[in-house]
Amino acid sequence: DYRVLATNRTSTMEKELNDAADAGFRFLVVMGGETAIGGNEAVAVLTKTPTGGSYAYKLLATSKTSTMQKELQEASDAGYEYRGQTVFKSAFGGDEVVCILEKDKAAPARKYDYKLVATSKTSTLEKELREAGAAGYEVLGMTVSKTAIGGKELVAITRKAK
Image 1 (cartoon, rainbow, N blue to C red):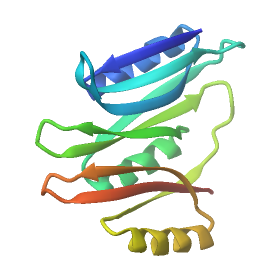
Image 2: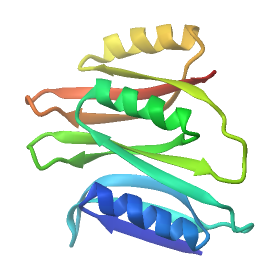
Image 3: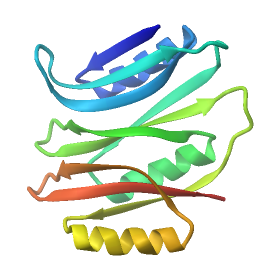
């Protein structure tokens, strides 16, 4: 059984994710962009959990890499783990990187250090990802977003166990 959530407001998506989790669903995947009828939306797909797991969700959205890294780390320290990311149009003309985080309420929290790698050049991205990998970080996801000042940035999210 699947449930599809679609909204153009990040706060609505977090509430709907948690409502679906209370009904026994678990997050699978997210994408953002133009949909045929809804305009610019974030669309998430969830699936019914066979065991009726107990999950909580947090959604982070920002156009600043430093803010996202700080908020990811705070959420990780509170027991949340990265599950997916997309890009969402902000009201201020740029794009926001949106991360969906999940907490398994029934399992002991695993702690991670998160590191965001953001650059406009693929050659720089490769160099920085190699350095992060050598330090024990693994790549979880990547998006391309347009910043509020008009540039485009590759944003890769990495983490390593504490």
